[in-house]
Image 1 (cartoon, rainbow, N blue to C red):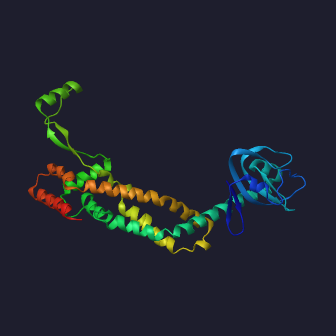
Image 2: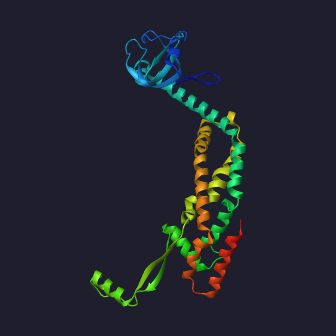
Image 3: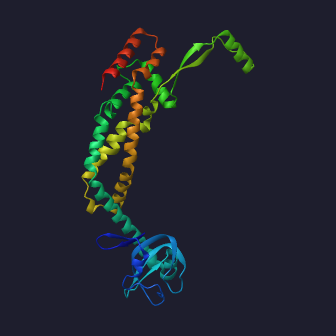
Length: 304
């Protein structure tokens, strides 16, 4: 691929023959009799081509198209450009690369503006659909935060499981005499009584939707909606190089963020299912807490 940097736009040329046919191009340019004026293009090929300097002709796969003061054009690799044209080449090549990046990023941002409305609709659908992101975020908060919707013991247990990323729900029971005897044999010492064992009850599906990096508000509102609003207020044509680079980098993350949010929504729906959460009732002892928890499960069944 060959990229030429014209005053108004980037021109992409597929065939090297098109460069050979350019007026003023030569593949026999003597650097001792020419002064470098500017770099007008760069290229990268799978097959190597030879350097256009008479005292080099080293084959290379990546290089630049340059113009001398008298209008002659040729192609050179970065190493021979530095060797034969010194600091002038280094300065011009750095500026050329920066200019290309700036134009590519500006073009990327302008192209992205045509996607904004579709993107807003996509985010709105993810948030407001039946048992979508907003519903999951609201009901998930009840599972891991203080409030009046769930017994504190449920909140503590779910928060602990999410923190340790352990989806298996355990309960404790007193070990039998036979189990204590087996433990004492294995450990070679007396076991203090009473001794309690952790016993798995169930696996709580969708627990990963509670992990900090899967916060749906962060993904859809902060990383996307708020950023889109800020971007929409920007003047692309007057953006600095650094600003263009920042927004181009963000654009590259959007599809990944949307895909991740969609997966978190699926996971959140599995989590906020009454049958999935019902085993948590086994850790409750207070009748009032049990009634409160059952009320919460019924609420999940009714809401859409």
